[in-house]
Image (tube, rainbow, N blue to C red; front, side, top):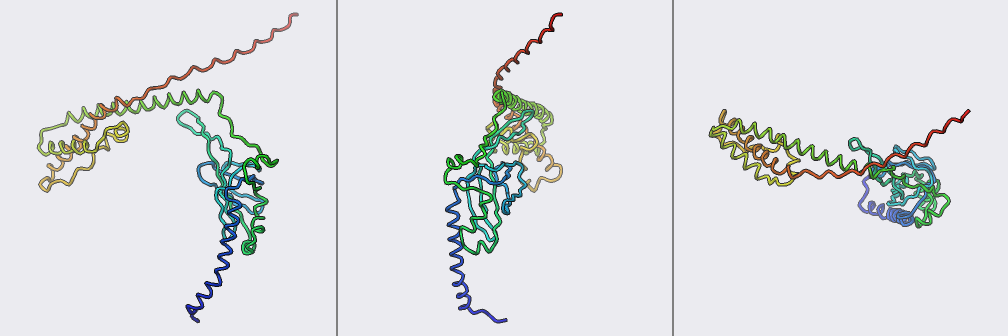
Length: 312
């Protein structure tokens, strides 16, 4: 096998520079025209409307996607990014009009506006890309998108489908008020459960406190360990529980072996849990939230009177 000299490598590299430069100019030219542009879709596209760009693979005017929501042709979108690749183009589209998406929270069906995005991957023959002709490369987008410089121009086009976000359900304000009251009640129920748990557990701990020297040493160390955690907010006491708040005890002195070590560890756990339980009851009672009033539901419209039977 012949070795390629360093000079030959340099010549090959220099010969490739015009091609790379031309490719860069081609992408820059196309990106300048398409990035930020407004478009109307000529074919259906798909999106999950979940905060990421849903993949849409396009070949000519055929689009394939696993996206769950279908948007019919004439959809208004803006090109947020444009990338030229060896086998085609990728355009990141953000649809102008959001979707109303439902979700469950407990017994309530709630709604939120979701921004819908799609990644349009357009196949282009390699010989077309190698031609370095922006017009030929751009021709692959004609069966898929109509380009405009402004959204107003796009909306004045007869190709726009005039899609608007779905309206919220009737009496949705009442649903939100009921949901807010339910959430407050759920919060207070959870807080009361923590208070009850702390009350029961602290009573059990006080019953098993003993005068063993090793136990008391561990008991004192456990109190200091939990106090040093700096728990002072509602979130702090709700994020921890009686079962997981006490950290692991430090390495025991060599003299503590067998029953002595077991007494120290039990005291450490009891001391930490006791101080956490007492502090929980003191703090959590002030963490209850006010339950908002729910407005009265409008009275249903009276049923129309039944028509009288004609007299005979």
